[in-house]
Length: 428
Image (cartoon, rainbow, N blue to C red; front, side, top):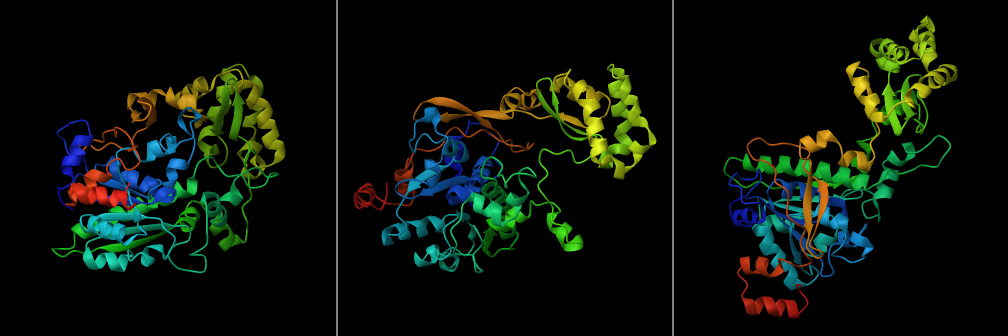
């Protein structure tokens, strides 16, 4: 890593003198849907990230939703968010000329993130072994559905396929429904986060290599990343031969679950492992608010975990608690519950999140400029704070091929050569 990218990063930020955490680090990101968040995390921390796109643009550009429902590769809101702060190079990597340019970029880079099908990079002569021979310090991170090896390695996949084959989809939904996937590309996002952590560790190891360049190839399986999020479902089967079931919409036990209130829902955890600490406080909460009949919840049977999981206990608690909850807003229930040290929280809508005073206090949301429309779009900021190298919001996502010419100029290509390569269909 060196300071060749520093001038670009300084120009793309807000002019503050404090350097970004990864300023000077150079990243090539050709990961598409599966790894775009990995590249974003490096860009957010100040690395110079070049988005390597095919001539017709990254597949993320064709992923909705689209601003004003204008279906166009420059109007994808997903692309705008995940690629803000990156530079765009459109290049045909199936052409020898494109491959030679790419190798020159690799020689100047610290990290390559890619999500091509196993074998594709090798057919181009751009596999890790080939690239490491000319860039021995390179860290190359490959994010694929099933990893680089094994019987599934060349299978096609989408996010929902990884969720299904990783087991997460089986646990999503209601007891009487088919499996239901949560909103968003959760498998891709999980893989991208694991990939960014692994890449950072490899880069740290590179700097600790005591004077000699030491790269590495990181093989990330999206399926395996999904399995990592299954909590204890695997252990339940391994140790007890119990297959966990879908439980959404059900009260697991009296005092724990989702309950309706005046303006939405809350989640309460007064029963189960919390019952010894919070049960009496919860009952007193109801009594103090004008529900004296809740005193029956203090009988000895309510101290028995086996009783709390019975339908009788769950139904009785529900009948006593819901009339109380429906009197109040989720904000009141949350604040009042906090004052009594009761674990209760509001279930936030997108509107609630944008108006949340905690997010507002920490300036969590930022604005990204959408270049084609010249509008500003509200987007999540960084979920961390660095005291010495503060995060700064990226200004905008690149237009398709916006930086192709300047990147080739940085490599030493003359104006005539750049024009010739574009006319030949190698670049855009």
